Image (cartoon, rainbow, N blue to C red; front, side, top):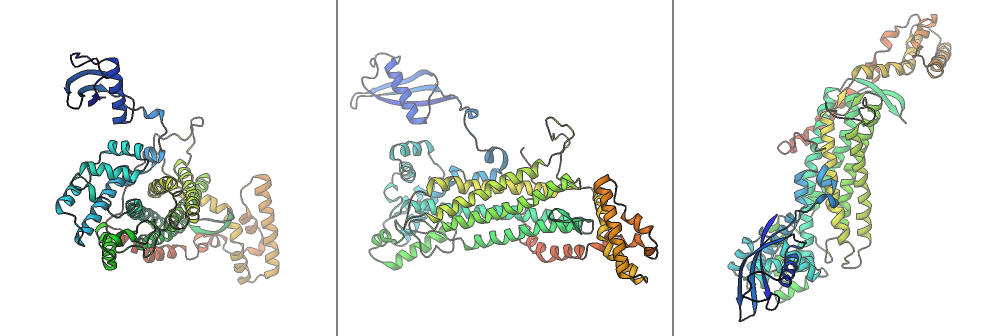
Length: 546
């Protein structure tokens, strides 16, 4: 990659102004300057384009063209949450440009509010700050941070370089957490809003599936052992219901988030009180103005230098809840895929196994489980961080939060993309479901058969004993000989049950209780209001990258 560079070097690093070709010493100085400028090694310096000498300051100014090799990312770890799983929108939310652009918007809001309350900050200074909000010189900030070892002050200096008239009022009275924590709260809120839309979309897809299969009977399970039948649609409502609980928690967290505002080094606002010469009301007004300018109604009423890390723990707890719901649904689908009753989408060219060509592995559901476990593991990190914050402030939260906050949201986003994709494309095999149900239904029907035989004039105790013996014999044939369940054949051959219509007794619809009606009620009472709230913002389709 070809680039241009202007290098200013002291006299004595070259053989002299009369020599148009840079010496080895000059080239060494040039390479060092370029490393300082761009933070990496350069390739060949192609040629010296322009050279001039200023005798007053004894500096050569030389313009070089040079080649910089493109970075080979395959030699560096890349986060698969970015490259494989999460959406570009969620990735952008946690990007450096969004983060540092928000810092600058906060500095603008601070300057505007301070000016409105009477501090000597001019319109020209504020206009200059606004003009440079998105013109971030990341290389300059990186150079400052290597020197200062302080990310906020590095960006203060880089912003000041771009806004020389406003340099002296940037970050006035503030501490680092004014920009870092208010930014994080803005990102948390927007991230939760994105997650809420994806949860609502998953609920919507599951609800549509539930309606379609509201009255398709299937075998129910407790302890993963056959139990009373339910319907395919009602089982989907169980999954959707978990997500509705998550959505309520997300909406609560969004509604309860506040700004940090301007609290100062220990939360007492002492520096701002000094700026306003002891005027408490102006300090209060400053907090209110900043909150409104950045989109919050209010700030937390009390804090240390940071907002309470309890907030992070609560937010990651909500994301963990989403992951728990997703993991449960995906695990159920993996079990049902094993039984060949329901499968996740499987594309025409998709390969299930590199060795076993016939396989249709539930890859998406397995990925949901894998990412969900990662999310739930991060919840404990946030809880530990909240519990060890010393007094008014300690910095051992910083590096941890740089990892846990973005990655929790990126992983939750990825999980919900998968959940919506899977829910919208589930494949049902009614005949397999019916066969599985038929194999177990005779045992479950015995109580109804007993009642029908008693109503036809039989002796309850005698009939109960007959059913017990026939049931155990049929079970032994299934387990020991691998035969089908022939309980109905045995009962049909027993004269004591001659008056019972065994075919009618075995109608699966008699065993699902109010399952279809419960689906209808759940959709109308729980899902419909969610659909109404998110009607304009539901992501209707999602595409997997891998």
